[in-house]
Length: 389
Image (cartoon, rainbow, N blue to C red; front, side, top):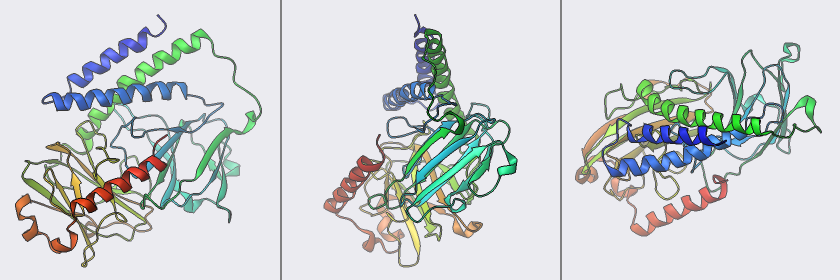
C-alpha cells in the first residue's frame, strides 16, 4: 500500500502520545489524541508543501495544527528554500504590531534547534506609502543591501511571523513568494514515486514533530524551579528583537499564581499558558493569554496576571482549564533596547480566597459574569477573523 509508511508512523505517533511521561489519566490522553490529530494534519500539509522551486507560504501552526507553544498572538508562515537560488517576497504591510523574517538552516529535531542564519523585522524593509514592499533572498553577496538578503550556506526555510496586540482592530497584511527565475513556468506532474516519497516524509515529520516538542521543554523549562519565571532573555533560536521569560507551574485548585510585570515600552508584550504537550491552551473560547493591549494595567504601571483554576473575578485572569501543571511564557517583541531584570516578572503563590487582600487595586480589576462573557465573545470574533484558515 502506498500509504502504509504513513499509517505505520501514525501508530508510532500514537504510542508516543500514550507513553508521554506527563500523562496521568484520561484528560491528558484526550488532549494528547487531539494534539495527535492536528499533528497528522500538519505533517501531511508540510510534506505536500515542500516546494523549493515553486514555493508558497504555508501556515506553520494554527488553532488545529498546534506545536511548540505556539503564540496565540502570532500568525506563522513558512516557505522552503534552496541556498543557491533567488526568491522574491512581495507583500503588503498590515497594521499588526510586528512583522518579522527569519531564515533557518533546517527544522527542529529532538536533538537540536536549527540555527538562525538571518533575523530581522520590517524596520529593515523599505515599505512604500501604500504599504507594499518587495524583498529578495539569494546567494549573491554583491547584491547585499536594502531589499536583498543574502542566503547563507544551508539556508532551508524562511519563517515569517505577523504578531497582533489589539486583536480586534489590527489588520493582517499579504504575503507571497516565488523563485525569481521560474515565473511563468510550472513543476513537472507528480508521479506515483513522488507520492510514495511524500507519504514517507509526512510520516517522518509526524514522529519527529511529536518527539521534538516533548523534548524541547526539558531543555528550557522543566529544569527550572517550579512556580518561578526567568528574567527576560533573548529567545533561544528566535528573533534578534525578541525576549522571553519562561517557567512551569504546578498548582492546586485553590491556589493562584500572581505574575506581576511592568507594562513595557516594547510594541508587543504578551503572556500565555500552555499544556504539558507544549502547545497553547484554547485561546479562542477562553482567556488563556493576554497582550498588554488586552490586559488591565494598574495605576502603578504594573500588570498583574492571575493564573488559577477557580474564577477570581479579575480582568487579568488566565484560565488553567483543568491543568494543574503547565507552561507560562511572556514575550516582548520589536524591541529597541536591551531588557533588564527589572523589566521582567515576579511571582507569588497565594490561596485564591486571599486575592482580594493580596492584590493591589483588586476592586478596580473586578469583572462581572456579563463582562467576562463579552470578553470571550470578542476573542471568538477576533480569532474567527484573522487566525483561522
